[in-house]
Amino acid sequence: MSGGPISFEHLARLSDDIGIFEHAELTAPRPEHGYCVDDVARALVVTTREPDPSPEMLALSRVYLTFLADAQIRNGRFHNRRSTDGSWTDQPGIGDWWGRALWGLGTAAARSPLYAAEALRLFEASADFRAPWSRAMAFAALGAAEVLTVHPEHRSARALLENAARFICTPPITPEWPWPEPRLRYANAALPEVLIAAGSMLERPEWTALGLQMLGWLLDVETAGDHLSVVPTGGWSAGEPRPGFDQQPIEVAALSDACARAFSVTGDVAWQDAVALCAAWFEGANDAGVSLRDPVSGGGCDGLEPLGRNENQGAESTLALLSTLQQSRRLLVPAS
Image 1 (cartoon, rainbow, N blue to C red):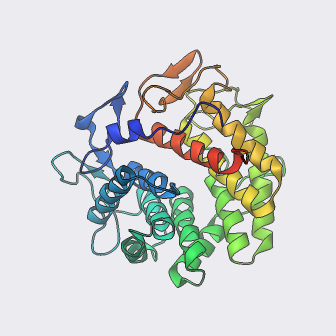
Image 2: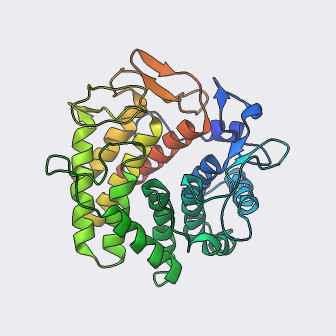
């Protein structure tokens, strides 16, 4: 892994005793924009993935877990947006933020001995919902897959993962477009990752095979020569010009997670190489030839533009960077 050790300095800068601020101006948090469950859940995934968390990392996990507990209402739905006075500014529901909340809670339940029991209880309170949107179901299913690593017979987690896989496993639009949606949108690789996870955990090898096929096609679409060229923020469909901008770090992080899972299931080093491409995208191996990783702040820039980068370092982009570097470190650091 290039670029030195992972720095969580900017993650801590963006966080306070309530949650993590959604936006930043350059490296300065913008409290006026408040917090959202989407980002807090991503942050909990990152902090509880750390194999040997520091006291500071444990404290951040506590903040994020408390935020998700506060966002969850009695019937299991979640608020998403919160202001700095602690009030919720939206109606609870089961959109993407619900899925990401379950992803964060499932990860904490599987990987954080200190908070596992509480996180699993919160996960169970919301895991029987089913959203009508592919991304929400995919994010929730990734949390279910985490739970199944430590509780392989967990009823709600198994059912959620299976239902999400069935939701995603629809016929491709055409043989030339082997994807279940007419347009690539955002966090695309989460869809095949769910199929790979469900196939391996639920003994459905046909799902694994389909997920690997989809992920391989997506990787080909999002590679230009020796670097990643991911779909722009507006999405992409066949025949539209490339490269497109703004390119978002969340797309690269999703690809990194999915390729890391594909490597863990298959042992095929091509997937390991793909994780390296994802890390390299942040370091400057991209369509603009500019690094999105700030070595001084530890943050990630908010997007790749035609001639450079968005210099702001908000929560989503910083967490996408950290998540990708975690996968790179886990798979690619040579043995001593």
